[in-house]
Amino acid sequence: MIRQTLIDHLKSRWRTKPIPLRIRLWNGIVVDLGATPTVTVHVTSMAGLRCLLDSTLDNLGKGYVEGRIDIEGRMMDVVAIAAELAAHPDNARHPFRRKPRLAWHDKKMDAQAIAYHYDLSNEFYSLWLDRDMVYSCGYFHEPTDSLDVAQTRKIDHILRKLRIRRGDRLLDIGCGWGALARRAAGVYGARVLGITLSQRQYEYACERIAREGLKDRCEVVLEDYRDVKGRFDRITSVGMFEHVGLKNMRDYFSRMRILLDTDGVAMNHGITSTDPDSRETPFGGGRFIENYVFPHGELAHIGLVLTNMSRAGLEIVDVENLRRHYALTLHHWVERFEAAAQECRILAGEKRWRIWRAYLAGCAHGFAHNWLSIHQVLVVRDRAGIASPLPLTRDYMYGESTG
Image (tube, rainbow, N blue to C red):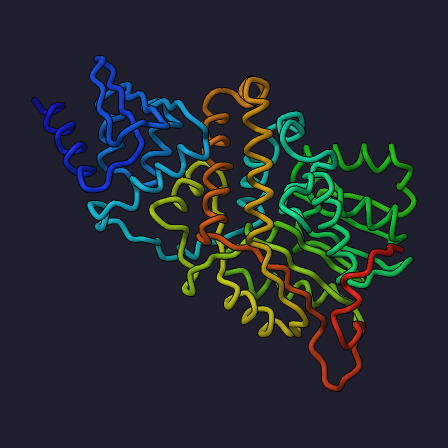
């Protein structure tokens, strides 16, 4: 009786706005919420049915990750339908975006969060990232560009913006698997220190540096950004400050200023919230990411980023929005992940595979629909006068030469 009441409620909810979804219950009952369904959800228990009724993105994601529901269909179609379910007026009691939690971050907590996300397996990431293992958005000239081309072009775009010169001392904060550090050293002739908290990334980066004969000018170490000593001509931070926390943001940029030489230039490339109050992604998407993907991750609106940079004594020189580039990158990642589904499943295990499958497709939808954004911000040390380490115009950023 209860089950039938829940089914009737589902059917009535979507009578005026059908969606192409078929729901198949554990007892064989089939409910279509629209003509010609493109996605089928297999509900394995009453708990799974409740996920559909209280259909926020975190509930739907949890139902899938925990095996309460299974899905058939293209993953991008699945996520689009999940977003429609989550946006239904019946979910009005759930905040569109949850307010930022302003969580406390310390070195131990951050190291644990990084290990959870990045130390899954280098083999796992290699199945769907590009050949250089770049885990941030590419830079596309055309939507048809390959992922490998877009990722190399993104690194060059960053290094040209920095106007890096041969012999410059470059610090790469959160260097990942070392692609930017290696290219800065090997192609541009910089002397590079990359830091990471991920053991797996460290091992991979060191092996690639040795293999490419760059040990004399490129080094990667396991170190927290709060412990780095010295001064640097150039600093990059790509896909890292999302882990810093909103409370720590001013301290993070203050630390960047301390490490930056007087005539230095720094670049922060990171995901941002599109909400002016830095609230989370809508319909429960942020809660799913916090619980399953990025523990303690927090996103700031670009306005808050710029405010904290200024308060830290940095002058903002240039800001570029790359949201559409990340949407394109994520579509590549989703396609590659799905194509390597069996290998990814074996390496990650069933639950982690489901987490990543939902996460990548969800992020692709989020960036395409402006739920999330990403910005490159170029800064120098704040100082009086007109002297600057950078030219007066942006023309220099778009040259094709390197070194």
